[in-house]
Image (cartoon, rainbow, N blue to C red):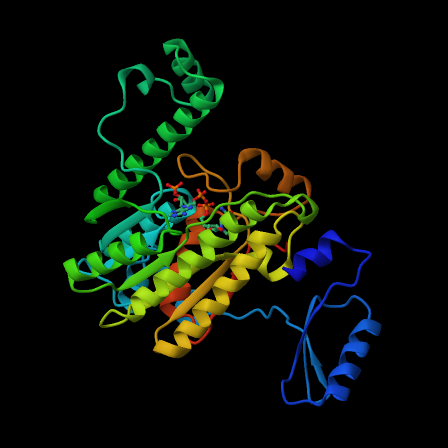
Length: 366
Ligand SMILES: NC(=O)c1ccc[n+]([C@@H]2O[C@H](COP(=O)([O-])OP(=O)(O)OC[C@H]3O[C@@H](n4cnc5c(N)ncnc54)[C@H](OP(=O)(O)O)[C@@H]3O)[C@@H](O)[C@H]2O)c1
């Protein structure tokens, strides 16, 4: 949160100072005065026993195996094997029917043919699409097709367009994963609904008798500078990630046999802060901490991947719209190629240091 505040208020010193609990009031006061005088070098600082530390990104490679690419055929099969995934394994991907996570689900399916359980808020598509809209292939054509039917307000047309596009995306994902050899199901649940998530995860585990991997990638953005943020908006953005992760992780803790891996989709905004994304940045940072504590408690692996922006492609554009992509290009920010991004995550899970609680993947600097 403070990394973003520091960006939004460049003339103000905004800093989180973590102090050691065992220091005397005089030492704490001196440390804080020191911080007020220290200039704007870092928005988060840890101070203890006279030392002062900031956080720094350090480049690390994955070792010689990973250097050879994602498996002999570059299809991720070697990585899936290293992760212990095969066609009997069960992987739950929250947010996996759409966007960049659908791309990762396809990589998992191609690499292991594991069983895949997808979750999103959108109600499951109820059958083939209505004849009247089927030929309308983009947003504009859909709007026109729905307007021609009459009886809907402009807002209702927008809602209907969003629902149809979401259904198409979910259907496309499910068909693609099946085509790659995975057994797939889609479930509709809101990650902010604690009871629904508990029931769903417990049910999936009971049915298969196992849950080998869990990916929490549900997220929403409602970008606005802090001065224009309202509390409900903050709660939606923060809660989707953080309440969702908390429910998911505590539910997993109560089940026998922890998953081989748990991945939380975070963002570079958490690491560096980003103007307009105070809620989103704070949420992604909190994800890492939740995952890290859960891993320490349970001995299971939790990895938060703080992604830089992905290039939008085809059906699974994700949060980076074509307009935003052009904006990034103007600022010289390169976008993650979806094919490469998904294989990077697979390699990270296969060969990365299991105790690492977070990694940053970007196509270029921020
Ligand atoms: N795209 C990028 O460049 C990028 C960069 C950094 C990090 N990320 C992270 O990657 C993840 C996926 O992003 P994306 O770009 O693929 O975005 P996206 O296309 O908007 O996908 C978000 C997914 O989350 C689901 N979702 C949202 N709220 C939910 C809720 N309350 N309960 C259950 N599911 C919910 C959505 O499904 P429904 O709409 O059906 O609910 C959708 O499947 C996010 O966590 C995002 O923060 C993305």
